[in-house]
Image 1 (cartoon, rainbow, N blue to C red):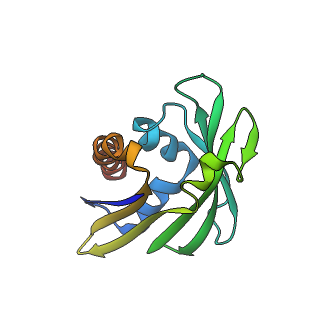
Image 2 (cartoon, rainbow, N blue to C red):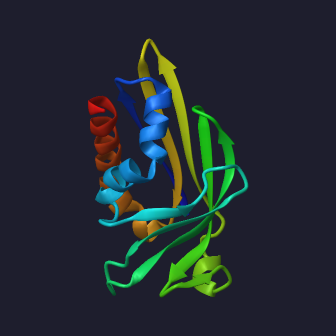
Length: 151
């Protein structure tokens, strides 16, 4: 497992960027670079369970991640703890495949200076996905910037 770091400056207040990132409709839009048709079920409240779902690119069936909101400091920081996988409608938090990488974290920090928000991301990824995410994350953050600045 490795931790990858990304950041982007967005010409919008951090409250607006936060809401754009986490609102269901705009979440679907900016995360489409990772998984077309992806969405979440659950609450962003600290301690809440979250499911990050979408069509599995290999099977076309619904799959995704079983997670928990580890920490939520409104408009400043959110930490997602990934605990398992969702496959064919079944949660898996105990298989050997899942035990290789759980728990892993996806952390977002929002800082604002003079109306410009910097979103910093730290995400734990398995070595087999590192190259893929090196390409996807900058595209995802660029999409978040585009949406945040046009709203």
